[in-house]
Amino acid sequence: MNNIIYHFFNLWEGFRMKKVSKMRIDLKGPYGNAFALLAIAGRLGRKLNLEPGVREMIHWDMTRSDYNHMVDVFDREFSDQVTLINKPK
Image (cartoon, rainbow, N blue to C red; front, side):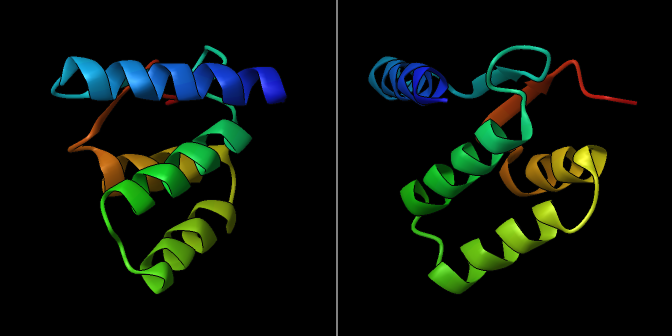
């Protein structure tokens, strides 16, 4: 898990430094698992200065059902910042 977090921070720094319009996450890759999506959502929420209560509600909504629901909530909340690739049907 530490390896995934390390790579995420490198991905995030690259995104920040290059001023890319949107971060891309391949859901079949190492950042597409549920734990990585939750970590990315939390970090994006802080970077976007979302209130702690709003971040908690997003986290709650992401974890209240299955993986497909988690992806839908993530896409709904962060589609302006992140493009999800290989979404489940």
